[in-house]
Length: 271
Length: 105
Image: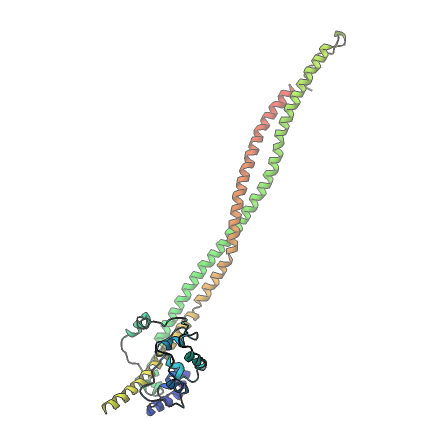
């Protein structure tokens, strides 16, 4: 705040000087300081020596109709334009745009009909229907607490500041700060809990996956071993059939022998 | 005369208006700095951003979990097949025992 006060003081005398002159210099410093507050240079006549670019355009009008003027200035330098702002680059001697634009003026006068419109001008209606501006305008009229600051900013500041107690605002601010911190801490704690749960679940799933794969491997081995049972049974069947066949063929062989050389009939004996 | 006084009055008001606008701008900037101090001092955004970052890092873990779950469904199917096979073979065991007993007779 102190810096802003001290910066204003050197600015003030220049403003008062400009008021006493009521001449051409009046609107210029405002335009140079606040390009947002673009004001047309009043009814006073500007001298040619101070504003060289106006002298250039006085004798040589730019283009056929005034409508072409804003379009020309849009040619690639600025996206938005308004009929008021077009005067600014002509008047402001320090802006870079003004140095570049006069260079394109000779082209403009020679080729008046070859304008390339990059983007058409904004409609002025949007400026008045802006929500924020409407709300700003609907604020009630009020006077500043330190009424003397309108004219003399440094007068009786400590007196007024003693009467103003910032304790309430400080308490409000700190309470709000604490509340925000609490809310953020709660949210962050819950989120961290969730993160921890995700980690837990991931590790649990990993363990489960390991168990399952282990079981799968064991079962594969067991199943492979047990599948041999099928082979064993099929081989047993073959053995049985082969043995039967063998016994039959032995009996036939035995019977085909002479009675003297026959062996005893074959009997299955266990043990 | 009247026009001169009105123009001078208008110019005076213009200057006070501009000064008032400057004061308002200063006040608005101060309020903004107070608000910034409140939001920075409470470290709300820091805490929330930190927890959000940590949560985002779990995304890899979540993807792993999803992949594991898919593998698990496959593994469960495999285990089902293996159980069926083992069951069948156990039944066959009984038959084989009968066969051996029959062969022994």
